[in-house]
Amino acid sequence: MADHVRHAPRPDFLKKPSLRGEQVLLRPVTVDDIAALMPMFLDAEASRLTGSHPDGRLDEARLRAWYGSRAEQDDRLDLAVVERVTGNVVGEVVLNGWDPGNESCNFRIFLVPGSYGRGLGTEATRLIVGYGFEALGLHRVSLEVYAFNPRARRAYEKAGFVAEGVLRDALLWEGERVDATVMSVLAPEWFRHGGRP
Image 1 (cartoon, rainbow, N blue to C red):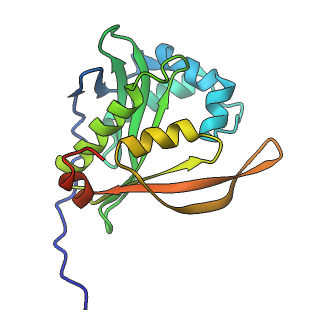
Image 2 (image 1 turned 120 degrees about the vertical axis):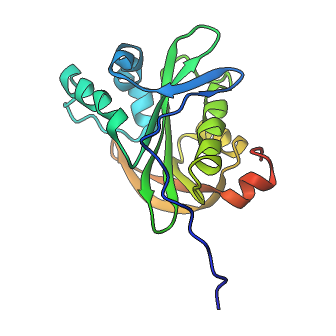
């Protein structure tokens, strides 16, 4: 017989925090961030690494409507990643796919080209995942990473994510089928290690 698990109260996704790290500040994303974020949408390599098939619908009106509505979302959290040294918006982090029955969320991060390799993504990941566990009461945060993106996988591992399994042929990219690794971090692991792997 399974132990009785007490459910946490429903997370308050309407509260959009600002989270400060040593290198990055996470703050609510706004319409004014579109110009800074545009390079990540237009970069072919960034699209490949995230498995984002171009659909021809990338236009400013659509982006303005999307980013203009982020503050109203009560089932997800979208934050801009700001490099503290420069004040530049260098990407976004998102907790989405809220599953109330299982107290879990999906995580994703998207950085503009040229901002990789400096630890910004790892710190941004730790900040938002920590917020998910410590403030929102989540039990599990998960993600998928494609086999051709080992740099991202290493960053996720540094932030405490553990590989769980492989989704075979999860992506069809330019005629090639690519596996995705499912990774997650659980609240007990996070608290046991103080937010460090």
